[in-house]
Image: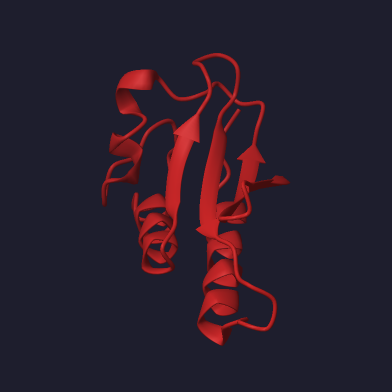
Length: 107
């Protein structure tokens, strides 16, 4: 995981793995409810839920990378001005981190 503040308007969290990657044709579909790719367990809801949480906080979630070279999931959230911290924002980030960590892509 790495972070990248971009132009002060948002913060990017990047979750990278070294698995088989995601074919470009499936990159948007993996965020659809009940869609699964490359795994035997789960209902295919994890990424749909994670994207919804991110969008509810004014952010974006997408996948990057090339097939055969691993995948990187990018969470871009609006930055908060100092002193404007929100409990909803904090709890949403915690829920997102739990969802991302509990759904590893098989190697």
